[in-house]
Image (cartoon, rainbow, N blue to C red; front, side, top):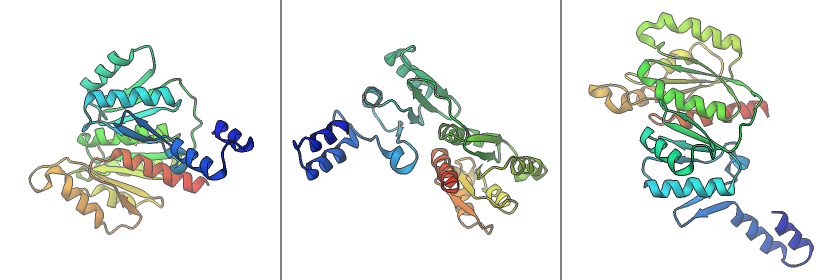
Amino acid sequence: MKEILEKVVNGEIDINEAENLLKSEKILEFDNIAKFDIQRNERTGFPEAVFSPSKDYEDLLVIIKKYLENNDEDLIITKLSNQRYEKIIGDLGENSFIFDYNKRAQILVIRKEVKQKEKIAKIGIITAGTSDINVAEEARVIVEEGGCEAITSYDIGVAGIHRLFPQIAHMVKEGVKAFIVCAGMEGALPSVVAGLVDVPVIGVPTSVGYGVGEGGRVALDAMLQSCSPGIAVVNIDNGFGAGVFALTIVNGVLD
Protein backbone atom coordinates (compact mmCIF):
# COMPACT_ATOMS: atom_id res chain seq x y z
CA MET A 1 0.00 0.00 0.00
CA LYS A 2 2.83 2.40 0.89
CA GLU A 3 4.53 1.77 -2.46
CA ILE A 4 1.30 2.46 -4.34
CA LEU A 5 0.69 5.70 -2.43
CA GLU A 6 4.27 6.83 -3.08
CA LYS A 7 3.72 6.30 -6.81
CA VAL A 8 0.61 8.49 -6.64
CA VAL A 9 2.52 11.25 -4.81
CA ASN A 10 5.36 11.07 -7.35
CA GLY A 11 2.94 11.24 -10.26
CA GLU A 12 3.90 7.80 -11.58
CA ILE A 13 0.29 6.55 -11.52
CA ASP A 14 -3.07 8.27 -11.29
CA ILE A 15 -5.84 7.82 -8.72
CA ASN A 16 -7.76 5.27 -10.80
CA GLU A 17 -4.71 3.06 -11.27
CA ALA A 18 -3.97 3.28 -7.54
CA GLU A 19 -7.53 2.25 -6.71
CA ASN A 20 -7.31 -0.80 -8.97
CA LEU A 21 -3.95 -1.82 -7.52
CA LEU A 22 -5.23 -1.52 -3.96
CA LYS A 23 -8.27 -3.63 -4.82
CA SER A 24 -6.11 -6.30 -6.40
CA GLU A 25 -3.86 -6.41 -3.34
CA LYS A 26 -6.83 -7.42 -1.19
CA ILE A 27 -6.79 -10.93 -2.65
CA LEU A 28 -3.91 -13.37 -2.68
CA GLU A 29 -4.07 -15.91 -5.49
CA PHE A 30 -2.27 -19.15 -4.77
CA ASP A 31 -1.17 -21.00 -7.91
CA ASN A 32 -4.69 -20.77 -9.37
CA ILE A 33 -5.91 -22.94 -6.48
CA ALA A 34 -7.37 -20.39 -4.07
CA LYS A 35 -8.08 -16.69 -3.86
CA PHE A 36 -7.49 -15.75 -0.24
CA ASP A 37 -9.29 -12.73 1.18
CA ILE A 38 -6.52 -11.24 3.31
CA GLN A 39 -8.51 -8.15 4.33
CA ARG A 40 -11.62 -9.93 5.54
CA ASN A 41 -10.56 -9.29 9.13
CA GLU A 42 -10.45 -5.54 8.53
CA ARG A 43 -13.75 -5.61 6.65
CA THR A 44 -15.79 -8.01 8.79
CA GLY A 45 -13.95 -8.32 12.09
CA PHE A 46 -12.76 -11.92 11.62
CA PRO A 47 -10.18 -13.43 9.24
CA GLU A 48 -10.94 -15.94 6.54
CA ALA A 49 -10.60 -19.61 7.51
CA VAL A 50 -9.75 -22.62 5.37
CA PHE A 51 -12.39 -25.38 5.12
CA SER A 52 -10.27 -28.47 4.61
CA PRO A 53 -12.38 -31.63 3.96
CA SER A 54 -13.13 -31.13 0.26
CA LYS A 55 -9.61 -30.00 -0.65
CA ASP A 56 -6.90 -32.20 -2.12
CA TYR A 57 -4.08 -32.42 0.42
CA GLU A 58 -1.46 -30.95 -1.93
CA ASP A 59 -3.74 -27.99 -2.66
CA LEU A 60 -4.32 -27.50 1.06
CA LEU A 61 -0.59 -27.49 1.71
CA VAL A 62 -0.01 -24.89 -1.02
CA ILE A 63 -2.68 -22.65 0.49
CA ILE A 64 -1.13 -22.94 3.95
CA LYS A 65 2.42 -22.26 2.76
CA LYS A 66 1.50 -19.30 0.58
CA TYR A 67 -0.66 -17.75 3.27
CA LEU A 68 2.08 -17.99 5.86
CA GLU A 69 4.60 -16.52 3.41
CA ASN A 70 2.40 -13.49 2.76
CA ASN A 71 0.66 -12.88 6.08
CA ASP A 72 1.60 -12.53 9.75
CA GLU A 73 -1.91 -13.21 11.04
CA ASP A 74 -2.98 -16.58 12.45
CA LEU A 75 -4.31 -19.14 9.99
CA ILE A 76 -7.42 -21.16 10.92
CA ILE A 77 -8.13 -24.52 9.29
CA THR A 78 -11.47 -26.17 10.07
CA LYS A 79 -12.69 -29.80 9.94
CA LEU A 80 -9.11 -31.04 9.72
CA SER A 81 -8.60 -34.74 10.45
CA ASN A 82 -5.88 -35.79 12.86
CA GLN A 83 -4.15 -37.70 10.04
CA ARG A 84 -3.93 -34.57 7.89
CA TYR A 85 -2.81 -32.49 10.86
CA GLU A 86 0.13 -34.81 11.52
CA LYS A 87 1.05 -34.72 7.84
CA ILE A 88 0.98 -30.91 7.82
CA ILE A 89 3.34 -30.79 10.79
CA GLY A 90 5.71 -33.13 8.97
CA ASP A 91 5.64 -31.08 5.77
CA LEU A 92 5.94 -27.65 7.41
CA GLY A 93 8.36 -28.60 10.15
CA GLU A 94 7.28 -28.89 13.76
CA ASN A 95 9.57 -26.10 14.93
CA SER A 96 8.74 -23.66 12.12
CA PHE A 97 5.41 -22.43 13.51
CA ILE A 98 3.18 -22.73 16.55
CA PHE A 99 0.51 -25.38 15.97
CA ASP A 100 -2.59 -25.28 18.16
CA TYR A 101 -4.73 -28.28 17.22
CA ASN A 102 -7.99 -29.20 18.93
CA LYS A 103 -8.38 -32.89 18.17
CA ARG A 104 -11.98 -33.07 19.34
CA ALA A 105 -13.11 -30.11 17.26
CA GLN A 106 -10.72 -30.95 14.40
CA ILE A 107 -9.67 -27.33 14.07
CA LEU A 108 -6.11 -26.04 13.69
CA VAL A 109 -4.69 -22.58 14.35
CA ILE A 110 -1.20 -21.94 12.96
CA ARG A 111 0.68 -19.01 14.48
CA LYS A 112 4.02 -17.42 13.75
CA GLU A 113 4.19 -16.09 17.29
CA VAL A 114 2.16 -16.12 20.49
CA LYS A 115 0.24 -12.89 20.94
CA GLN A 116 -1.30 -11.91 24.24
CA LYS A 117 -4.86 -10.77 23.62
CA GLU A 118 -6.88 -8.77 26.09
CA LYS A 119 -10.23 -10.46 26.67
CA ILE A 120 -12.92 -8.13 25.34
CA ALA A 121 -15.98 -10.01 26.61
CA LYS A 122 -17.32 -13.34 27.83
CA ILE A 123 -19.41 -15.80 25.84
CA GLY A 124 -21.20 -18.83 27.27
CA ILE A 125 -21.04 -22.13 25.39
CA ILE A 126 -23.39 -24.97 26.33
CA THR A 127 -24.09 -28.45 24.99
CA ALA A 128 -27.08 -30.66 25.53
CA GLY A 129 -25.00 -33.84 25.51
CA THR A 130 -21.46 -35.14 25.45
CA SER A 131 -21.86 -36.02 21.77
CA ASP A 132 -22.25 -32.30 20.95
CA ILE A 133 -18.92 -31.28 22.47
CA ASN A 134 -16.92 -31.47 19.23
CA VAL A 135 -19.09 -28.74 17.68
CA ALA A 136 -18.99 -26.64 20.86
CA GLU A 137 -15.21 -26.90 20.97
CA GLU A 138 -14.98 -25.57 17.42
CA ALA A 139 -17.02 -22.56 18.54
CA ARG A 140 -14.83 -22.14 21.62
CA VAL A 141 -11.62 -22.01 19.57
CA ILE A 142 -13.13 -19.33 17.31
CA VAL A 143 -14.46 -17.30 20.24
CA GLU A 144 -11.07 -17.31 21.96
CA GLU A 145 -9.23 -16.58 18.71
CA GLY A 146 -11.48 -13.53 18.38
CA GLY A 147 -10.40 -12.19 21.75
CA CYS A 148 -13.24 -13.34 23.99
CA GLU A 149 -13.27 -15.56 27.05
CA ALA A 150 -15.37 -18.71 26.65
CA ILE A 151 -17.23 -20.05 29.68
CA THR A 152 -18.26 -23.62 28.90
CA SER A 153 -20.62 -26.14 30.41
CA TYR A 154 -21.24 -29.43 28.65
CA ASP A 155 -23.83 -32.21 28.95
CA ILE A 156 -26.59 -30.21 30.63
CA GLY A 157 -29.51 -30.89 28.29
CA VAL A 158 -33.23 -31.18 28.88
CA ALA A 159 -33.04 -34.89 29.72
CA GLY A 160 -31.79 -33.77 33.14
CA ILE A 161 -32.85 -30.16 33.13
CA HIS A 162 -31.95 -29.62 36.81
CA ARG A 163 -28.31 -29.56 35.65
CA LEU A 164 -28.95 -26.53 33.48
CA PHE A 165 -30.08 -23.84 35.92
CA PRO A 166 -26.96 -23.51 38.12
CA GLN A 167 -24.76 -23.26 35.02
CA ILE A 168 -26.95 -20.62 33.39
CA ALA A 169 -27.00 -18.65 36.64
CA HIS A 170 -23.21 -18.78 36.85
CA MET A 171 -22.80 -17.52 33.28
CA VAL A 172 -25.29 -14.72 33.78
CA LYS A 173 -23.44 -13.71 36.95
CA GLU A 174 -20.20 -13.66 34.93
CA GLY A 175 -21.82 -11.22 32.48
CA VAL A 176 -21.73 -13.23 29.26
CA LYS A 177 -22.80 -11.22 26.22
CA ALA A 178 -24.19 -14.17 24.23
CA PHE A 179 -24.85 -17.89 24.53
CA ILE A 180 -23.92 -20.57 22.02
CA VAL A 181 -26.11 -23.62 22.58
CA CYS A 182 -25.34 -26.88 20.76
CA ALA A 183 -27.92 -29.65 20.70
CA GLY A 184 -28.87 -32.64 18.61
CA MET A 185 -31.80 -35.06 18.94
CA GLU A 186 -34.91 -32.86 19.28
CA GLY A 187 -32.86 -29.65 19.64
CA ALA A 188 -34.87 -28.24 22.55
CA LEU A 189 -32.10 -26.72 24.66
CA PRO A 190 -31.69 -23.31 22.90
CA SER A 191 -35.40 -22.58 23.40
CA VAL A 192 -35.11 -23.28 27.12
CA VAL A 193 -32.00 -21.12 27.47
CA ALA A 194 -33.54 -18.24 25.51
CA GLY A 195 -36.52 -18.31 27.88
CA LEU A 196 -34.19 -17.67 30.82
CA VAL A 197 -31.74 -14.99 29.64
CA ASP A 198 -31.80 -11.46 28.21
CA VAL A 199 -28.85 -11.77 25.80
CA PRO A 200 -28.77 -13.31 22.31
CA VAL A 201 -28.80 -17.10 22.01
CA ILE A 202 -27.18 -18.82 19.02
CA GLY A 203 -28.59 -22.27 18.39
CA VAL A 204 -26.32 -24.84 16.78
CA PRO A 205 -28.09 -28.02 15.65
CA THR A 206 -25.78 -31.01 15.66
CA SER A 207 -25.93 -34.18 13.59
CA VAL A 208 -26.51 -36.25 16.72
CA GLY A 209 -29.56 -38.49 16.67
CA TYR A 210 -31.14 -41.53 15.11
CA GLY A 211 -34.33 -42.42 13.27
CA VAL A 212 -36.13 -39.25 12.17
CA GLY A 213 -33.53 -37.18 14.05
CA GLU A 214 -30.57 -38.60 12.19
CA GLY A 215 -28.31 -36.02 10.58
CA GLY A 216 -29.55 -33.06 12.65
CA ARG A 217 -32.47 -31.90 10.51
CA VAL A 218 -35.03 -32.34 13.31
CA ALA A 219 -32.86 -30.27 15.65
CA LEU A 220 -32.47 -27.59 12.96
CA ASP A 221 -36.22 -27.38 12.31
CA ALA A 222 -36.99 -27.26 16.04
CA MET A 223 -34.59 -24.37 16.62
CA LEU A 224 -35.91 -22.46 13.61
CA GLN A 225 -39.47 -22.62 14.93
CA SER A 226 -38.63 -21.94 18.57
CA CYS A 227 -41.32 -20.08 20.48
CA SER A 228 -38.67 -18.29 22.58
CA PRO A 229 -37.59 -14.96 21.08
CA GLY A 230 -33.97 -13.94 20.80
CA ILE A 231 -32.62 -17.02 19.01
CA ALA A 232 -30.53 -17.09 15.85
CA VAL A 233 -29.75 -20.46 14.27
CA VAL A 234 -26.73 -21.52 12.23
CA ASN A 235 -26.32 -24.57 10.02
CA ILE A 236 -25.95 -28.13 11.28
CA ASP A 237 -22.58 -28.70 13.05
CA ASN A 238 -21.51 -25.14 12.25
CA GLY A 239 -19.54 -24.31 15.39
CA PHE A 240 -17.33 -22.00 13.36
CA GLY A 241 -20.28 -19.91 12.18
CA ALA A 242 -21.71 -19.74 15.69
CA GLY A 243 -18.41 -18.52 17.08
CA VAL A 244 -18.04 -15.81 14.43
CA PHE A 245 -21.63 -14.67 14.93
CA ALA A 246 -21.12 -14.43 18.69
CA LEU A 247 -18.04 -12.28 18.07
CA THR A 248 -20.05 -10.09 15.70
CA ILE A 249 -22.64 -9.55 18.42
CA VAL A 250 -20.01 -8.71 21.02
CA ASN A 251 -18.13 -6.33 18.74
CA GLY A 252 -21.38 -4.59 17.81
CA VAL A 253 -22.29 -4.10 21.47
CA LEU A 254 -18.81 -2.80 22.39
CA ASP A 255 -18.76 -0.41 19.44
